[in-house]
Length: 270
Image (cartoon, rainbow, N blue to C red):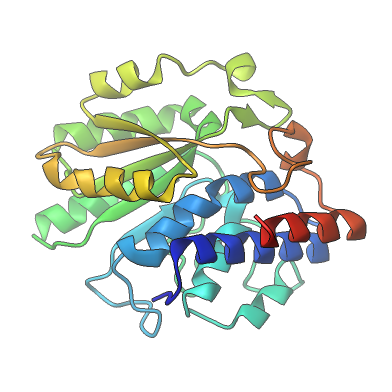
């Protein structure tokens, strides 16, 4: 379990993510930065887990459905004690378990993701398993907003509502940017709250960078009897780095040496 504050963990996640993407000349840093606060709240005090036993039965299950933002998850796991932070330097290397999309070969990663639309259906299956076996562990799934254009998610939503999977919490990283444009211009998903509620889910909208609001929303799950919960986390893509914020190109770019230096300074001094 991470010993510092969630703010400290978010900063560590951002710094490690920047370094990994820069060293590997990889991409998706904007997506990683937008979920750093969500992961920090989860791994900094919400999730039940044991880094010394990745198969700890009573652990909460967390699935990063937007697997392209894996550097943020790998960073969260490293700083939470699943493996050494130094191991992150092998991200994107040949024969490394730290692949460019989330890999279950990495300790603490429940499910390999990358092809969008798979995480929520898998999480629904996990939540159903916990209900059938009368276990108390919870299932968390973090999705992207553009990912909601995948029909598999809506089938999973119907299934979760029908089976009253109230141990299931889905969080949407709602930054409104995907690939080369905005979500609205690609395939609009609004009115999203109305749609999710129509599918039988409880819905809470929060500032996805407000740690207290995120934790409060997750704890509200206790009042969502016989319904799964969706948390719409309004975020900024590239959050924490001024020249990356709300810039769609950072879905694919990696920072240069000078850009890494500036980005790291901004995160460290935020």
